[in-house]
Amino acid sequence: VAIFGGRSNPALARKIAESYGTTLGEVTIRDFADGEIYVRFEESIRGADLFIIQSTHPSADNWMELLLMIDAAKRASAARVTAVMPYFGYARQERKDQPRVSIAAKLTANMLTTAGVDRILTMELHAPQIQGFFDVPVDHLYGSGVLIDYLKQFDLDNFVVVAPDVGALKMARAYAQKLGVNLALIDKRRPRQNEARVMNIIGDVEGKNVVIIDDIVDTAGTLTRAARALREKGALEIMAACTHGLLSGPAYDRIEASPMERLIITDTIPLKRPSESIEVVSVAGL
Ligand code: R5P
Image (cartoon, rainbow, N blue to C red):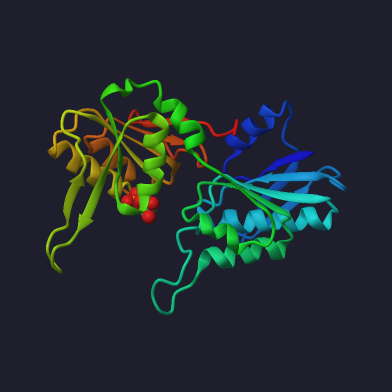
């Protein structure tokens, strides 16, 4: 077995290797002056059961780097190549929901297969049906595997799990069941075009501590709007737990200005900067 990391998340790659009592294999990855990427494995991997750890965020270069690593590994006669993708970028474009758009998740799945991947190990795909885009095995892990244990440190007596939209309901229900607490749902709707969106909360949050559950926090609009609606309805301590912290654009400012006391995320993507409002739980053990 040989474990290598791309450049997207070196800290997590090191932790994963450590959890197997080993170190990462040596690979040179660098950028040419024009931005193209060079990859070379610096040790023999002939016949190896090879694991390449790479989150594809930010997307374009990290995707290309992963594909080049898989291609180099297959050409160097690795016996089996597993792409370990803690965060699978482009998973949110997984169907043709408007005319003339791409299905990027299918395209990226095809690219992995063309590069020669034998197996994918990934986490909390935005749409689990993406597994069906592959003809190789996909191991699909869940952030709840570490986030539920972390949440158990809080006093759960007066706790409610909240789904910030209908899309997050199934996941939030699983958290509520595993934590043994009640569930609430934010139903966002625009009564008429050009009218402000109304946030109806289904379930009782008044006088309760709440944890909002989502798979991804990107610009943090979803979470912080939900947090404000929950505070208006009388929620006490408000926190959120999400697997993937993309934290793009205004995310940090929104989180720090929101009524949310803490955001718990995993380390599938490295933090862009530390923040007192953000706590990180490692998925390396999983
Ligand atoms: C959307 O379908 C996802 O589950 C997240 O709710 C979304 O990606 C969060 O995006 P943002 O943080 O930009 O509101």
